Length: 164
Image 1 (cartoon, rainbow, N blue to C red):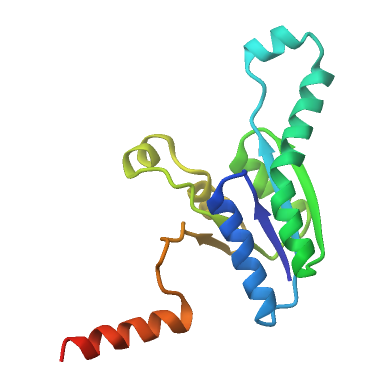
Image 2: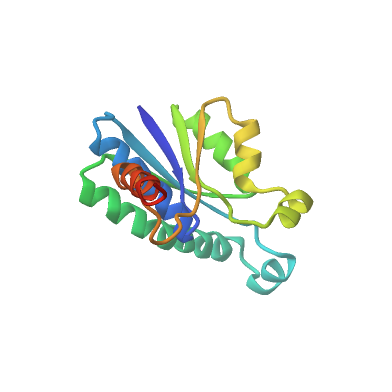
């Protein structure tokens, strides 16, 4: 199974990478495609740079830098991966990369936008969820000190026992 992991440098995008690593450790035979999407240059940047190659190099370097922590995590976990830096609208680029790399699933972090901002602007994860032809798994930001897995079950049992 090939997993697409969009990484924007945020902690929640790295949590999605950690989640994919957990899936692999639990027996999922997979490889990964890491992608970072750089926004198009602004008019000001285009005027000031004078050379489109300079802007392309800066975007490629910024994308490569954003991917480094995720690459290190996958390397440490022994998961085979490829990396891609794209430019343009993030949701459209992600959907295109899913098709180009023949990915089976997308695992991505929730954008973390508030409800009002998400309603006004939309979110990348929401757009990908609706536009993508493969399953999309949204990983929400973890709440620190929140119980996980067996710990969550134990916590529920402890609370129930305390109410008796």
